[in-house]
Image (cartoon, rainbow, N blue to C red; front, top):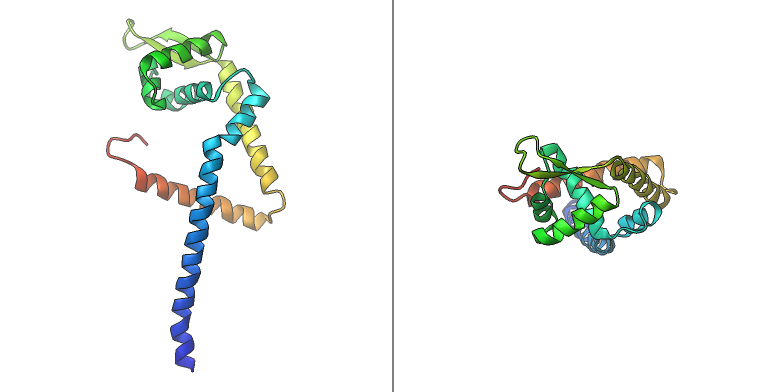
Length: 173
């Protein structure tokens, strides 16, 4: 009988792993739906810039993410958020009018116009980050410190692995 128990342990572990993989897959599907609805982004917009749409948020986020790589053009924004350049130009113009972006002259080529975030846009991101963290804090309020710590580490490890495996040739970091 001792032998049967040892043989059953790997099968029980394998079954448990399959259940875990199934639960993770299901949870990721549910999370994708929530992310697709952009719940946190909508809440942040309501609390900080109620007149903006999610597409506006995409544009200012594109500028923020692309700026460390150098100057950001309307074309780079269009490519980043996957819209045509004329749509990107209209969105940028609207955000310039609202005081979230400013157009400046390229330091590399004076014939080219580039886009930068204003202090108001930086403030939006500070507030949005507080909203996002508050949302997470509310959801995890009853978790133990150990569970929260373990979740933070494991989620980061999972997302890092996902990023590494999903990177296509030519993708920037």
